[in-house]
Image 1: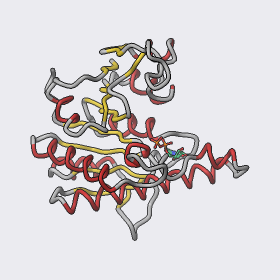
Image 2 (image 1 turned 90 degrees about the horizontal axis):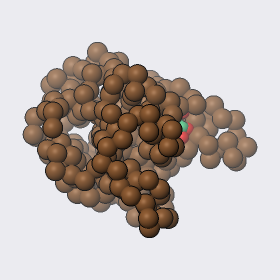
Image 3 (image 1 turned 120 degrees about the vertical axis):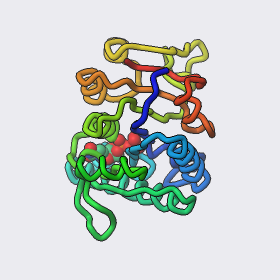
Image 4 (image 1 turned 45 degrees about the horizontal axis):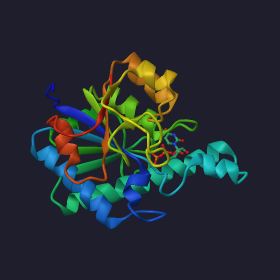
Length: 235
Ligand code: UDP
């Protein structure tokens, strides 16, 4: 496998929820932080985009009758909570990191600029990109692709519940087969649930490869990087 020296890891809010039904699971946050720190110690620069679905999603607000833009603002705030949690846990473990928010909130963290983010990455700090893209009607998957491209990451690592992409939902269909590699076009035409269409299209336009793997399995992130993990490559 090609050696990647700067990667972007996307973790959904759901992953940070662990076995809980809402919010953050300290053990899961700690496990993810360990995996990230190990990757940093191996010499790789790591940018992180965190989701917010464990706390709030814009669609849920819309279902409650709230205006969509406000609901999305609430969702973006949820990603900041998760970003601050990852930062605190990484700090506790001795791993240097910065939270850079797409929406300025100077009392909590710095604002995202690609220049600043690159400087921190070059100095070996984990850059935690919070508040998604800063715009409503987008997802953190799209923000992850955007940040990966902006920061010239050569691989997007998408940590999910499953160890890659299957032909059907493996939780519901026992005949679902694991796919070791798929094209961007397959994801779109076969409606493989990996990322929303905006995210996949942006990745395709910029030839950004994506590795979909299980973030639930401890140490799996390192195995994806050294080519020994069961995962799916989208390219
Ligand atoms: N969000 C947004 N713009 C962005 C990224 C996220 O408005 O660029 C909002 C949106 O409401 C979304 C919520 O933040 O539902 C949480 O993000 P997401 O659903 O992507 O989190 P995940 O599913 O990865 O936990």
